Amino acid sequence: MRIVKALIGALMGVSLTACEVQDQQGAKTTVTPREVYEQRASKDVLIIDVRTPTEFRMERIKEAQNKPLDQIQQWLKELPKDKKIYFVCRSGNRSGQAQRMAQQAGYTNTYNMQGGMLAWTREGLPVVSGE
Picture 1: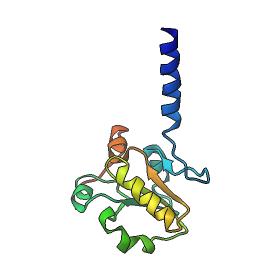
Picture 2: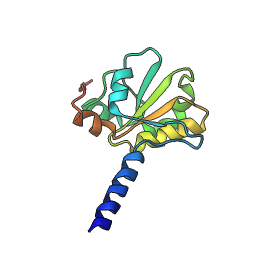
Picture 3: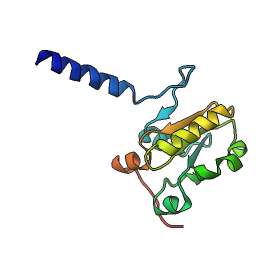
C-alpha cells in the first residue's frame, strides 16, 4: 500500500510540473488564464483567439482579436514581433498549435493560454459575447 501511495504522489508531482510547457531552449511557452487576465490591458500585449468566428462571437476575452487557426498562413506574418502574443482557443489545443507555428516563424514572445476559454470561465474571469 505504501508503494501505491508513493507512486500516486510521484505521478501527481510529475503531472503538476508538466503543466508548464517549455520550448527546446527552456523558455516558458504556456501561461495561465490569470496571467493573461493580468496582462490583457498592456499596450505590449496582443491576445489572439484562434477559434472560429462563431465560437468567438459566443464568448471571448474583451481585448482579444479573432484570427482563426485555419487561416493562420494569411495572418501570421502580419503579427508584430515587438509584443507578447497570447494565443487562446476553447481548450488550449488549437492555440498551442498556433503558438508553435508562430515560434517556428521567428516569433519569440508567444504563449499558449493553458486550458483555453474553458479554464478562463472556470476561474470566473470576465467575458463578452455578441458582435
